[in-house]
Image 1 (cartoon, rainbow, N blue to C red):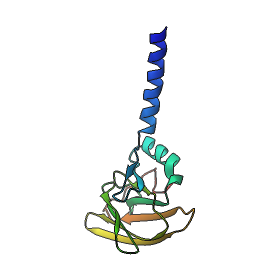
Image 2 (image 1 turned 90 degrees about the vertical axis):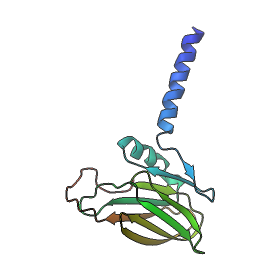
Image 3 (image 1 turned 45 degrees about the horizontal axis):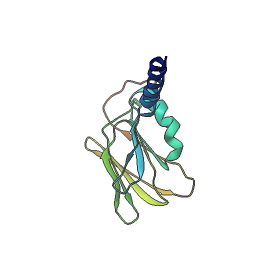
Image 4 (image 1 turned 120 degrees about the vertical axis):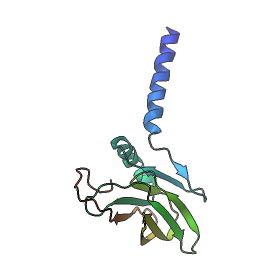
Length: 147
C-alpha cells in the first residue's frame, strides 16, 4: 500500500515537473529573469501563464506569412549602453524582467537588424514585435500575436 501511494505521488510530481519545466526560466548576466520559447503549442500556453512576471515581451515573426521565427539574436541595452541581454532566442517569444528605465531592443534575423526603443515604468508590460522578410508567402493559422 505504501509503495503504491509513493508511486502515485512520484507520478504526480513528475507530471507537475514536466508542465512547469516546459519553458524553464533563465537569468541574464545581470541576474534578471527571462524565458524564451513558444515553438510548440504547449510552450506558448506555459509562457502565457508566466507573461505577467515580465516587463518586456518580444515577438519575432515572418513579415508576409506571420509564421513564428526562432533563433533570432536579441540584444537589449540600457540607457547607459550597457548590455542587459544578448542571445539568440529559443522560439518566437522572449519575456524579460527588466527594471525601470529606457532600453534599446535590437533583433537580428539572418542579415536583417531592427531596433525598438522602450521605457519601462512601474507595472508596465511592453511589447516589441519584429517582423522579418523571409521570402515565404504561405499564411499560417497560428498568426503572430502576443498573448
